[in-house]
Amino acid sequence: MTETLTTPASENSRGKSLLALIPGLLLLFVVGYAGKFIEQSISRYGKTHHLVLPNIEYVLWAILIGLLIANTVGVPQLFRPGVATYEFWLKVGIIFMGARFLIGDILRLSGISLILVLIELALALTFMTWLGRRFNLKPKLISLLAVGASVCGVSAIIATQGAIDADEEDSSVAIAAILLLGAISLLFFPLIGHALHMSDHAYGLWTGLAVDNTAEATAAGALYSDAAGKYAVLAKTCRNALIGFVVLGYAIYWASKGEATVVTNKAAFLWLKFPKFILGFLLLSVLASLAVFNKPQIVALGNLSRWAFLLTFAGVGLRTNFRELGKQGLRPFVVGAVGEIVIAGITLALVLLADHHFHL
Amino acid sequence: MPAKRQFLSLDTWAILLCCLLAALIRAGLIKTIPW
Image 1 (cartoon, rainbow over the protein chains, first blue to last red):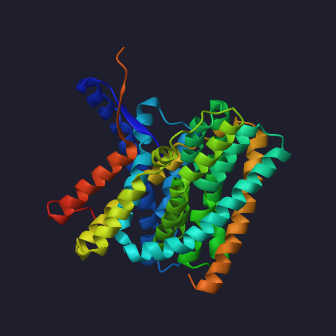
Image 2: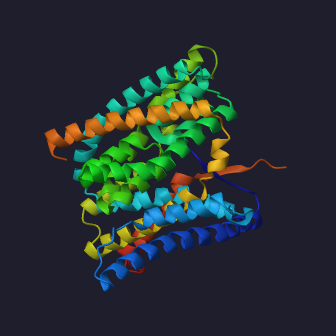
Image 3: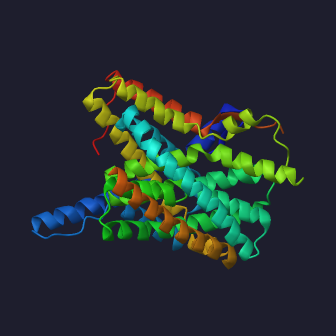
């Protein structure tokens, strides 16, 4: 979560680069809204014909339409800058979601989430490192896969790549593995959740713990229910908040081997790697808890959050090209897949245990 | 070629946009499209 917008010196080219976003933004909206339209149409058809049809959330339709476009005709160059803004809309959606949480709830839920996150972190880092060594992957690729699977997906991998001076190739292999597995998890997580009759809270917590990339974790939660999406975001945000500590740990490890730059100011390093949008999420939650907004205003902020997520989910499908991801080789993908399945199983057991004891 | 200047991070832009829209909603100046 360390991307920066680089702005050219002249106002003219800044205006042009903003204009270049418009086609892709329109595509995100059209794909996302088509998903919403399909969901509403199916629901309306069921009601008028007195049929009980399964309620498939617009999230799945939007992602499927995006996947269909990306993997058949492809996304033309004209649309790519705007489509790439999906991560910005993800952050906007999460920040607005802060208004739907009282700060007391965040502290209480984060407490449980944080304990589970710390257990997940330790397990994922240890297991992925062990597995990567068994498959004779390159040591820095193992570090990138371990960070991607334990903390925060793509952002964590990019942050770690810079901190441990890893090859760009290793980084793109690790990112491809995490994204491919994230896309697959969108299919299986809701099915498992429904099969086990999990509550919204337990399911959301599980997806937040087990799905690695923030966009996919949010989508996997929202596929189950609106409430599950909220809990998934909260648990995933707890994981994201720890990104700096894990990256710092790896930076120190590789620097001790003389294969990365030594970190001199650790506090500045932690702040640099901290995903700042979490502060926006907390700010809106504090304002909502202080009753700065009335009920209709909270509803309006919730609407903005949902519209921003609609753009995000369309982007998740549009940027996933299976052929490109598959080019990165089988071994890292196998390590990622085995690791993810084991981590998903362990986190599921942890969440079910926590649900049994603490009634989540 | 002059060096490109690093402007605000994506996170900061997101926070600023959200604060602006929240302030406009709070002031009753804009309404949102119902979900």
